[in-house]
Length: 137
Image (cartoon, rainbow, N blue to C red; front, top):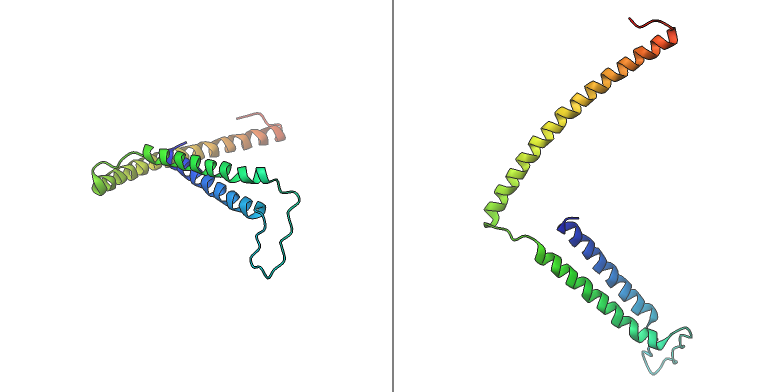
Protein backbone atom coordinates (compact mmCIF):
# COMPACT_ATOMS: atom_id res chain seq x y z
CA UNK A 1 0.00 0.00 0.00
CA UNK A 2 1.41 3.40 -0.93
CA UNK A 3 2.02 6.15 1.60
CA UNK A 4 -0.91 8.29 0.47
CA UNK A 5 -3.32 5.39 1.00
CA UNK A 6 -1.78 4.75 4.40
CA UNK A 7 -2.22 8.43 5.29
CA UNK A 8 -5.87 8.29 4.24
CA UNK A 9 -6.39 5.14 6.28
CA UNK A 10 -4.66 6.68 9.30
CA UNK A 11 -6.77 9.84 8.99
CA UNK A 12 -9.91 7.69 8.97
CA UNK A 13 -8.62 5.83 12.03
CA UNK A 14 -8.01 9.09 13.89
CA UNK A 15 -11.48 10.34 12.97
CA UNK A 16 -13.08 7.08 14.16
CA UNK A 17 -11.12 7.14 17.42
CA UNK A 18 -12.10 10.76 18.02
CA UNK A 19 -15.74 10.07 17.27
CA UNK A 20 -15.78 7.02 19.55
CA UNK A 21 -13.95 8.88 22.32
CA UNK A 22 -16.42 11.76 22.33
CA UNK A 23 -19.36 9.39 22.13
CA UNK A 24 -18.09 7.24 24.98
CA UNK A 25 -17.34 10.22 27.19
CA UNK A 26 -20.74 11.68 26.46
CA UNK A 27 -22.52 8.39 27.13
CA UNK A 28 -20.61 7.26 30.22
CA UNK A 29 -19.85 10.50 32.02
CA UNK A 30 -21.64 10.94 35.32
CA UNK A 31 -24.55 13.36 35.44
CA UNK A 32 -23.75 16.83 36.74
CA UNK A 33 -26.08 19.12 38.63
CA UNK A 34 -26.38 22.28 36.54
CA UNK A 35 -28.04 24.49 39.11
CA UNK A 36 -28.85 24.32 42.82
CA UNK A 37 -32.48 24.87 41.82
CA UNK A 38 -32.68 21.47 40.11
CA UNK A 39 -32.91 18.14 41.89
CA UNK A 40 -29.90 15.87 42.13
CA UNK A 41 -29.47 13.86 38.89
CA UNK A 42 -30.10 10.14 39.21
CA UNK A 43 -27.06 7.93 39.58
CA UNK A 44 -26.28 5.56 36.73
CA UNK A 45 -26.56 2.11 38.34
CA UNK A 46 -24.42 0.39 35.70
CA UNK A 47 -21.66 2.94 35.93
CA UNK A 48 -18.32 1.50 36.94
CA UNK A 49 -16.31 4.40 38.35
CA UNK A 50 -12.93 2.67 38.00
CA UNK A 51 -13.66 1.68 34.41
CA UNK A 52 -14.88 5.18 33.55
CA UNK A 53 -11.77 6.75 35.04
CA UNK A 54 -9.56 4.42 32.99
CA UNK A 55 -11.41 4.80 29.66
CA UNK A 56 -10.33 8.38 28.86
CA UNK A 57 -6.70 7.44 29.49
CA UNK A 58 -6.90 4.45 27.16
CA UNK A 59 -8.72 6.40 24.46
CA UNK A 60 -6.27 9.30 24.74
CA UNK A 61 -3.36 6.89 24.44
CA UNK A 62 -4.91 5.37 21.30
CA UNK A 63 -5.39 8.85 19.78
CA UNK A 64 -1.81 9.84 20.58
CA UNK A 65 -0.50 6.60 19.09
CA UNK A 66 -2.56 7.14 15.92
CA UNK A 67 -1.29 10.72 15.66
CA UNK A 68 2.32 9.51 16.04
CA UNK A 69 1.79 6.95 13.27
CA UNK A 70 0.35 9.70 11.09
CA UNK A 71 3.38 11.91 11.79
CA UNK A 72 5.70 9.02 10.92
CA UNK A 73 3.90 8.51 7.61
CA UNK A 74 4.13 12.23 6.82
CA UNK A 75 7.85 12.15 7.62
CA UNK A 76 8.25 9.23 5.20
CA UNK A 77 6.83 11.22 2.29
CA UNK A 78 9.48 12.03 -0.29
CA UNK A 79 10.65 15.61 -0.34
CA UNK A 80 9.94 17.60 -3.47
CA UNK A 81 13.25 18.26 -5.18
CA UNK A 82 13.57 21.38 -7.29
CA UNK A 83 10.36 23.07 -6.29
CA UNK A 84 7.19 23.56 -8.26
CA UNK A 85 8.82 23.66 -11.70
CA UNK A 86 10.41 20.26 -11.19
CA UNK A 87 7.12 18.84 -9.96
CA UNK A 88 5.26 20.20 -13.00
CA UNK A 89 7.93 18.76 -15.30
CA UNK A 90 7.65 15.37 -13.59
CA UNK A 91 3.85 15.49 -13.87
CA UNK A 92 4.15 16.22 -17.61
CA UNK A 93 6.57 13.29 -18.01
CA UNK A 94 4.21 10.96 -16.15
CA UNK A 95 1.25 12.12 -18.23
CA UNK A 96 3.19 11.48 -21.45
CA UNK A 97 4.16 8.02 -20.19
CA UNK A 98 0.54 7.37 -19.22
CA UNK A 99 -0.63 8.40 -22.70
CA UNK A 100 1.89 6.06 -24.35
CA UNK A 101 0.85 3.13 -22.16
CA UNK A 102 -2.81 3.97 -22.74
CA UNK A 103 -2.34 3.91 -26.52
CA UNK A 104 -0.57 0.54 -26.30
CA UNK A 105 -3.36 -0.86 -24.14
CA UNK A 106 -5.93 0.46 -26.64
CA UNK A 107 -4.09 -1.32 -29.51
CA UNK A 108 -4.01 -4.54 -27.49
CA UNK A 109 -7.71 -4.19 -26.67
CA UNK A 110 -8.59 -3.71 -30.32
CA UNK A 111 -6.50 -6.77 -31.29
CA UNK A 112 -8.17 -8.84 -28.56
CA UNK A 113 -11.64 -7.72 -29.70
CA UNK A 114 -10.80 -8.67 -33.30
CA UNK A 115 -9.55 -12.07 -32.15
CA UNK A 116 -12.70 -12.56 -30.08
CA UNK A 117 -14.80 -11.70 -33.13
CA UNK A 118 -12.95 -14.32 -35.18
CA UNK A 119 -13.33 -16.96 -32.45
CA UNK A 120 -17.05 -16.28 -32.18
CA UNK A 121 -17.43 -16.55 -35.94
CA UNK A 122 -15.55 -19.86 -36.01
CA UNK A 123 -17.58 -21.14 -33.07
CA UNK A 124 -20.80 -20.15 -34.82
CA UNK A 125 -19.71 -21.96 -37.99
CA UNK A 126 -18.74 -25.05 -35.99
CA UNK A 127 -22.07 -25.02 -34.16
CA UNK A 128 -23.97 -24.62 -37.44
CA UNK A 129 -22.00 -27.50 -38.95
CA UNK A 130 -22.76 -29.73 -35.98
CA UNK A 131 -26.44 -28.82 -36.02
CA UNK A 132 -26.79 -29.30 -39.75
CA UNK A 133 -24.63 -32.41 -39.67
CA UNK A 134 -22.60 -31.02 -42.45
CA UNK A 135 -18.98 -31.91 -43.01
CA UNK A 136 -16.62 -28.97 -42.60
CA UNK A 137 -15.52 -27.40 -45.90
